[in-house]
Image 1 (cartoon, rainbow, N blue to C red):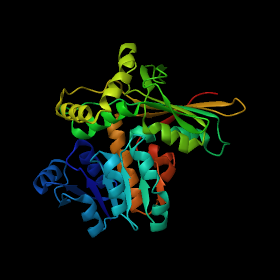
Image 2 (image 1 turned 90 degrees about the vertical axis):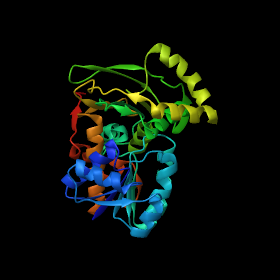
Image 3 (image 1 turned 120 degrees about the horizontal axis):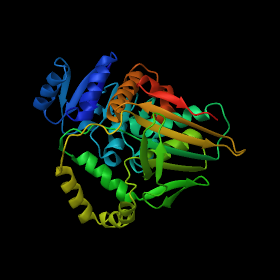
Image 4 (image 1 turned 120 degrees about the vertical axis):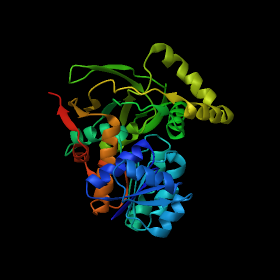
Length: 352
Protein backbone atom coordinates (compact mmCIF):
# COMPACT_ATOMS: atom_id res chain seq x y z
CA UNK A 1 0.00 0.00 0.00
CA UNK A 2 1.21 3.49 -0.85
CA UNK A 3 3.12 5.41 1.83
CA UNK A 4 3.45 9.07 0.84
CA UNK A 5 6.56 10.84 2.11
CA UNK A 6 6.17 14.62 2.15
CA UNK A 7 9.48 16.46 1.87
CA UNK A 8 11.10 13.43 0.25
CA UNK A 9 14.07 15.38 -1.15
CA UNK A 10 15.35 16.31 2.32
CA UNK A 11 17.87 14.24 4.28
CA UNK A 12 15.28 12.70 6.57
CA UNK A 13 12.67 12.14 3.86
CA UNK A 14 15.20 10.42 1.60
CA UNK A 15 16.31 7.99 4.29
CA UNK A 16 12.74 7.24 5.36
CA UNK A 17 11.88 6.37 1.76
CA UNK A 18 14.80 3.93 1.63
CA UNK A 19 13.80 2.33 4.91
CA UNK A 20 10.13 2.04 3.91
CA UNK A 21 11.17 0.17 0.76
CA UNK A 22 13.54 -2.05 2.79
CA UNK A 23 10.59 -3.07 4.96
CA UNK A 24 8.43 -4.03 2.00
CA UNK A 25 6.43 -0.81 1.84
CA UNK A 26 5.73 1.23 -1.27
CA UNK A 27 7.23 4.73 -0.87
CA UNK A 28 5.79 7.58 -2.93
CA UNK A 29 7.99 10.67 -3.03
CA UNK A 30 6.02 13.90 -2.68
CA UNK A 31 7.21 17.47 -3.14
CA UNK A 32 6.99 20.65 -5.19
CA UNK A 33 9.29 19.63 -8.05
CA UNK A 34 8.85 16.40 -9.99
CA UNK A 35 12.31 16.86 -11.48
CA UNK A 36 13.96 17.02 -8.05
CA UNK A 37 11.88 14.10 -6.83
CA UNK A 38 12.90 11.90 -9.76
CA UNK A 39 16.54 12.87 -9.24
CA UNK A 40 16.27 11.99 -5.55
CA UNK A 41 14.62 8.66 -6.35
CA UNK A 42 17.49 7.75 -8.67
CA UNK A 43 20.13 8.84 -6.16
CA UNK A 44 18.73 6.65 -3.38
CA UNK A 45 18.21 3.60 -5.57
CA UNK A 46 14.44 3.95 -5.93
CA UNK A 47 14.33 4.97 -9.58
CA UNK A 48 11.03 3.20 -10.14
CA UNK A 49 9.30 4.92 -7.22
CA UNK A 50 6.21 7.01 -7.96
CA UNK A 51 6.61 10.76 -7.50
CA UNK A 52 3.85 13.29 -6.84
CA UNK A 53 4.40 16.96 -7.59
CA UNK A 54 2.05 19.24 -5.67
CA UNK A 55 2.00 22.68 -4.06
CA UNK A 56 -0.99 21.68 -1.90
CA UNK A 57 -0.25 18.39 -0.18
CA UNK A 58 -3.44 18.32 1.88
CA UNK A 59 -5.68 18.74 -1.17
CA UNK A 60 -3.81 16.05 -3.11
CA UNK A 61 -3.99 13.64 -0.15
CA UNK A 62 -7.73 14.18 0.19
CA UNK A 63 -8.14 13.54 -3.54
CA UNK A 64 -5.92 10.46 -3.94
CA UNK A 65 -6.35 8.76 -0.52
CA UNK A 66 -2.92 7.20 0.21
CA UNK A 67 -2.83 4.57 2.96
CA UNK A 68 -0.25 6.44 5.07
CA UNK A 69 1.22 9.94 4.93
CA UNK A 70 4.61 10.72 6.50
CA UNK A 71 5.13 14.44 7.07
CA UNK A 72 8.81 15.50 7.13
CA UNK A 73 8.33 19.06 5.87
CA UNK A 74 8.55 20.66 9.33
CA UNK A 75 6.56 23.58 10.68
CA UNK A 76 4.38 20.96 12.36
CA UNK A 77 2.44 23.46 14.44
CA UNK A 78 0.95 24.68 11.16
CA UNK A 79 1.20 21.66 8.84
CA UNK A 80 0.29 18.67 10.99
CA UNK A 81 -3.42 19.23 11.63
CA UNK A 82 -4.56 20.07 8.06
CA UNK A 83 -2.50 17.25 6.57
CA UNK A 84 -3.67 14.72 9.16
CA UNK A 85 -7.31 15.72 8.64
CA UNK A 86 -6.85 15.27 4.89
CA UNK A 87 -6.13 11.59 5.63
CA UNK A 88 -9.61 11.09 7.10
CA UNK A 89 -11.43 8.79 6.90
CA UNK A 90 -9.36 5.66 7.11
CA UNK A 91 -5.94 6.99 6.13
CA UNK A 92 -3.07 7.20 8.60
CA UNK A 93 -0.60 9.98 9.44
CA UNK A 94 2.93 10.13 10.92
CA UNK A 95 5.17 13.11 11.70
CA UNK A 96 8.45 13.94 13.44
CA UNK A 97 7.26 16.77 15.68
CA UNK A 98 9.08 17.23 18.98
CA UNK A 99 7.62 20.37 20.49
CA UNK A 100 4.89 21.33 22.90
CA UNK A 101 2.87 23.33 20.38
CA UNK A 102 2.49 20.89 17.48
CA UNK A 103 2.21 17.66 19.42
CA UNK A 104 -0.75 18.65 21.66
CA UNK A 105 -2.60 19.95 18.59
CA UNK A 106 -2.34 16.58 16.88
CA UNK A 107 -3.18 14.62 20.05
CA UNK A 108 -6.32 16.78 20.33
CA UNK A 109 -7.58 15.11 17.12
CA UNK A 110 -7.88 11.77 18.94
CA UNK A 111 -11.68 11.56 18.90
CA UNK A 112 -11.85 12.58 15.22
CA UNK A 113 -9.33 9.89 14.32
CA UNK A 114 -11.17 7.22 16.33
CA UNK A 115 -14.48 8.07 14.67
CA UNK A 116 -12.85 7.93 11.21
CA UNK A 117 -10.86 4.73 11.78
CA UNK A 118 -7.53 6.51 11.31
CA UNK A 119 -4.31 6.43 13.32
CA UNK A 120 -2.26 9.59 13.82
CA UNK A 121 1.26 9.33 15.28
CA UNK A 122 3.30 12.37 16.28
CA UNK A 123 6.93 12.38 17.35
CA UNK A 124 8.04 9.22 15.54
CA UNK A 125 11.78 9.97 15.72
CA UNK A 126 14.52 9.61 18.31
CA UNK A 127 13.16 12.80 19.80
CA UNK A 128 10.12 11.47 21.73
CA UNK A 129 10.42 7.70 21.08
CA UNK A 130 13.97 7.51 22.42
CA UNK A 131 12.79 8.34 25.94
CA UNK A 132 9.08 7.50 25.74
CA UNK A 133 9.87 3.85 25.01
CA UNK A 134 12.00 3.64 28.17
CA UNK A 135 9.20 5.10 30.29
CA UNK A 136 6.64 2.73 28.76
CA UNK A 137 8.93 -0.22 29.46
CA UNK A 138 9.51 0.74 33.10
CA UNK A 139 5.83 1.46 33.76
CA UNK A 140 4.36 -1.61 32.04
CA UNK A 141 1.92 -3.49 34.32
CA UNK A 142 2.68 -1.22 37.27
CA UNK A 143 0.76 1.37 39.24
CA UNK A 144 0.96 5.04 38.28
CA UNK A 145 4.31 6.49 39.39
CA UNK A 146 4.79 9.74 41.26
CA UNK A 147 7.82 11.18 39.46
CA UNK A 148 9.43 10.68 36.06
CA UNK A 149 12.62 12.16 34.69
CA UNK A 150 13.68 11.64 31.07
CA UNK A 151 16.89 12.67 29.32
CA UNK A 152 17.32 12.61 25.53
CA UNK A 153 20.98 12.39 24.52
CA UNK A 154 21.21 12.14 20.73
CA UNK A 155 24.45 11.72 18.82
CA UNK A 156 24.16 12.83 15.20
CA UNK A 157 26.53 13.11 12.26
CA UNK A 158 26.09 16.55 10.70
CA UNK A 159 25.81 16.91 6.95
CA UNK A 160 27.28 20.03 5.44
CA UNK A 161 25.00 22.62 3.86
CA UNK A 162 22.30 25.09 4.80
CA UNK A 163 20.64 24.64 8.17
CA UNK A 164 17.22 24.86 6.52
CA UNK A 165 13.96 26.53 7.50
CA UNK A 166 12.38 23.52 9.24
CA UNK A 167 15.24 23.15 11.72
CA UNK A 168 15.57 26.92 12.18
CA UNK A 169 11.87 27.17 13.04
CA UNK A 170 12.22 24.32 15.51
CA UNK A 171 15.15 25.98 17.30
CA UNK A 172 13.44 29.36 17.51
CA UNK A 173 10.19 27.75 18.68
CA UNK A 174 12.02 26.09 21.55
CA UNK A 175 13.60 29.36 22.63
CA UNK A 176 10.30 31.26 22.55
CA UNK A 177 8.34 28.58 24.40
CA UNK A 178 10.70 28.61 27.37
CA UNK A 179 11.17 25.83 29.90
CA UNK A 180 8.28 23.64 31.07
CA UNK A 181 7.67 20.74 33.44
CA UNK A 182 4.75 18.90 35.04
CA UNK A 183 3.96 19.52 38.70
CA UNK A 184 0.93 17.94 40.36
CA UNK A 185 -0.44 17.00 36.96
CA UNK A 186 -0.21 20.52 35.53
CA UNK A 187 2.25 21.80 32.96
CA UNK A 188 4.00 24.79 34.53
CA UNK A 189 6.74 27.20 33.41
CA UNK A 190 10.35 26.53 34.31
CA UNK A 191 13.57 28.31 33.49
CA UNK A 192 14.90 27.38 30.06
CA UNK A 193 17.97 25.12 30.42
CA UNK A 194 17.12 24.34 34.05
CA UNK A 195 18.09 21.00 35.64
CA UNK A 196 21.53 20.73 33.96
CA UNK A 197 23.04 17.27 34.29
CA UNK A 198 26.27 15.47 33.47
CA UNK A 199 25.39 11.86 32.67
CA UNK A 200 27.69 8.88 33.12
CA UNK A 201 26.56 6.74 30.20
CA UNK A 202 26.43 2.93 30.31
CA UNK A 203 29.23 2.71 27.71
CA UNK A 204 31.65 4.69 29.88
CA UNK A 205 31.29 8.02 28.08
CA UNK A 206 29.62 11.17 29.39
CA UNK A 207 27.03 13.61 28.03
CA UNK A 208 25.43 16.83 29.23
CA UNK A 209 21.78 17.87 29.10
CA UNK A 210 19.46 20.60 30.34
CA UNK A 211 15.73 21.23 30.49
CA UNK A 212 13.82 22.45 27.46
CA UNK A 213 10.29 22.52 26.03
CA UNK A 214 10.55 19.29 24.04
CA UNK A 215 7.98 16.67 23.15
CA UNK A 216 9.71 14.17 25.43
CA UNK A 217 8.02 15.92 28.35
CA UNK A 218 4.49 15.37 27.02
CA UNK A 219 5.23 11.81 25.89
CA UNK A 220 6.65 10.83 29.28
CA UNK A 221 3.58 12.25 31.01
CA UNK A 222 1.20 10.38 28.70
CA UNK A 223 3.16 7.11 28.92
CA UNK A 224 3.35 7.12 32.71
CA UNK A 225 0.44 9.19 34.00
CA UNK A 226 2.90 10.61 36.57
CA UNK A 227 1.89 14.00 38.02
CA UNK A 228 5.51 15.20 38.20
CA UNK A 229 7.67 15.01 35.06
CA UNK A 230 10.94 16.65 34.07
CA UNK A 231 12.59 16.33 30.65
CA UNK A 232 16.07 17.37 29.57
CA UNK A 233 17.85 17.21 26.22
CA UNK A 234 21.43 17.08 25.10
CA UNK A 235 20.48 19.61 22.41
CA UNK A 236 19.80 22.31 25.02
CA UNK A 237 22.98 24.24 25.96
CA UNK A 238 24.10 23.53 29.52
CA UNK A 239 27.06 25.93 29.84
CA UNK A 240 26.35 28.50 32.61
CA UNK A 241 26.97 31.55 30.42
CA UNK A 242 24.67 30.33 27.65
CA UNK A 243 22.00 29.27 30.15
CA UNK A 244 22.04 32.79 31.59
CA UNK A 245 21.28 34.48 28.26
CA UNK A 246 18.73 32.01 26.88
CA UNK A 247 15.71 33.58 28.65
CA UNK A 248 16.66 37.00 27.26
CA UNK A 249 17.05 35.58 23.76
CA UNK A 250 13.70 33.84 24.08
CA UNK A 251 11.98 37.09 25.09
CA UNK A 252 13.43 38.94 22.10
CA UNK A 253 12.42 36.18 19.70
CA UNK A 254 8.78 36.50 20.78
CA UNK A 255 8.72 39.78 18.84
CA UNK A 256 7.33 38.70 15.43
CA UNK A 257 9.74 40.77 13.31
CA UNK A 258 12.75 39.56 15.30
CA UNK A 259 11.53 35.98 15.08
CA UNK A 260 11.11 36.11 11.30
CA UNK A 261 14.54 37.68 10.88
CA UNK A 262 16.17 35.06 13.11
CA UNK A 263 14.54 32.17 11.25
CA UNK A 264 15.66 33.54 7.87
CA UNK A 265 19.25 34.06 9.02
CA UNK A 266 19.51 30.70 10.74
CA UNK A 267 17.94 28.85 7.80
CA UNK A 268 20.54 30.33 5.45
CA UNK A 269 23.49 29.55 7.72
CA UNK A 270 26.01 27.08 6.31
CA UNK A 271 26.80 24.16 8.60
CA UNK A 272 30.09 22.30 8.32
CA UNK A 273 29.97 18.49 8.17
CA UNK A 274 31.04 16.70 11.33
CA UNK A 275 31.03 13.12 12.60
CA UNK A 276 28.72 12.22 15.44
CA UNK A 277 30.31 13.08 18.81
CA UNK A 278 29.66 9.69 20.43
CA UNK A 279 29.18 6.17 19.15
CA UNK A 280 25.73 5.87 20.70
CA UNK A 281 22.62 7.97 21.21
CA UNK A 282 20.92 7.40 24.56
CA UNK A 283 17.42 7.77 25.93
CA UNK A 284 17.22 7.68 29.73
CA UNK A 285 14.40 7.51 32.27
CA UNK A 286 14.15 7.37 36.05
CA UNK A 287 10.72 6.49 37.43
CA UNK A 288 9.72 6.74 41.11
CA UNK A 289 6.53 5.39 42.69
CA UNK A 290 4.68 6.75 45.75
CA UNK A 291 6.22 4.04 48.00
CA UNK A 292 9.72 5.24 47.09
CA UNK A 293 10.50 2.44 44.64
CA UNK A 294 12.70 3.71 41.81
CA UNK A 295 13.55 2.09 38.48
CA UNK A 296 16.00 3.34 35.88
CA UNK A 297 16.73 2.28 32.30
CA UNK A 298 18.44 3.40 29.12
CA UNK A 299 17.78 3.01 25.42
CA UNK A 300 20.90 2.66 23.25
CA UNK A 301 20.81 3.56 19.56
CA UNK A 302 23.38 4.57 16.95
CA UNK A 303 23.13 7.81 15.00
CA UNK A 304 19.93 9.51 16.15
CA UNK A 305 18.95 10.49 12.60
CA UNK A 306 19.35 6.91 11.40
CA UNK A 307 17.19 5.74 14.30
CA UNK A 308 14.62 8.39 13.39
CA UNK A 309 14.40 7.16 9.79
CA UNK A 310 14.10 3.55 10.93
CA UNK A 311 11.46 4.34 13.57
CA UNK A 312 9.37 6.46 11.20
CA UNK A 313 9.54 3.88 8.42
CA UNK A 314 8.67 1.07 10.84
CA UNK A 315 5.69 3.08 12.13
CA UNK A 316 4.44 3.85 8.62
CA UNK A 317 4.73 0.27 7.39
CA UNK A 318 2.96 -1.09 10.46
CA UNK A 319 0.12 1.37 9.99
CA UNK A 320 -0.12 0.40 6.32
CA UNK A 321 -0.49 -3.23 7.45
CA UNK A 322 -3.35 -2.24 9.74
CA UNK A 323 -1.47 -2.73 13.01
CA UNK A 324 -2.39 0.62 14.55
CA UNK A 325 -5.47 1.39 16.60
CA UNK A 326 -7.63 4.37 15.73
CA UNK A 327 -6.79 7.58 17.53
CA UNK A 328 -3.96 10.10 17.92
CA UNK A 329 -0.87 9.01 19.84
CA UNK A 330 2.81 9.32 20.45
CA UNK A 331 4.71 6.39 18.86
CA UNK A 332 4.99 4.02 21.82
CA UNK A 333 1.40 4.89 22.73
CA UNK A 334 0.31 3.70 19.30
CA UNK A 335 2.54 0.67 18.79
CA UNK A 336 4.26 -0.14 22.09
CA UNK A 337 7.77 0.21 23.50
CA UNK A 338 9.10 -2.58 21.28
CA UNK A 339 8.77 -0.22 18.31
CA UNK A 340 12.11 1.22 19.44
CA UNK A 341 13.74 -2.21 19.28
CA UNK A 342 12.32 -2.78 15.81
CA UNK A 343 14.03 0.49 14.83
CA UNK A 344 17.40 -0.90 15.95
CA UNK A 345 17.69 0.22 19.58
CA UNK A 346 18.42 -1.86 22.68
CA UNK A 347 17.18 -1.39 26.24
CA UNK A 348 19.70 -1.36 29.06
CA UNK A 349 18.08 -1.91 32.47
CA UNK A 350 19.96 -0.49 35.47
CA UNK A 351 20.25 -2.60 38.59
CA UNK A 352 17.74 -1.68 41.35
